Image (cartoon, rainbow, N blue to C red):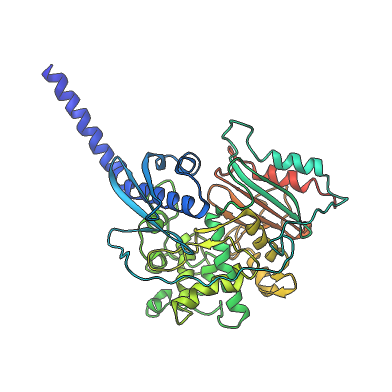
Length: 449
């Protein structure tokens, strides 16, 4: 009996040590992800906790978190096995922010000044209901089948699509939502937010206030080898800076999103690993550094906050959009943009029309061309904070397609040769869960040239 107890004790000790070595370091990230997800989903999109836990947080390891919501205090708290409790607060107009224990809740904060588009036009150029338009070259039966096929049948959890919106020749030709979602639901775009960040630089470039081919205005780099890195290198994810982005483990990206107070500084402080423009490396840290650089272009925090909305977001009527901040007050330009699927489609439409929005040139045509031009060493799959099909990732889709892409299969596909924008939002990535090539092919094939 004593021998058995000794063996049992040894097993328990080894199990505890294994847990401590493999899992405990992840708890802070798990509870951080969960608290932020719960606060954003509940307060931005009014989702009940049960729905968030079943459809947003049902991710391996993340589902270990225990969550609670304080509606009166407007915050969410998460922990794992009672350990590593994290808190995310909500502020109207700013969304949710994951905070650390030393965050000063009494500190005053600024809100972006918003302007709602009121032009009495139907969607997509306004916020009225879209016109009923029928195109003779669209096989609507085939289109409906393609859209329906993007969604799970009752009870299944394989494709997990939440919304599909299809624009053709500036008209809404298809739209569908999963149970619990509708045209007013705000959905997190994750890394599609990177394309929003890029567009802010596009406006500054159009205004002649920034030259992307000059060294990036980062004072911390002026005395070392990083001083030659340009904004062009950063926009292209081609800076040569050290960075690891692997969401299956603890890495630079996860520590930045769920621990850092000032996310832009995480990439800023990384050393150069390669010469600029020689090694493409996808980095959410780079986009948050771009957001920090953008912040430094303005004299005041208020000007910075207002610019994102006045320059692009509200300009094209994306009035539902909220870009959330980190603890330092910098927009998390890599990942935290929320908007309705219809509003995400408006952003695609802006780029489809080469930066022109209903007659107003918001971005130079040259900027949109730059955006959709392959980055060196990316093998035709990446431009300037946009993904590309130039390398044939989707074999049955035109090569001129470029697109915003986000974690769990968010997409705004822009196809100039077909005058089409396709939005898909969900919580499942590509095969074996969701077949993006088949989805896009089905929609495209319903339209005769």
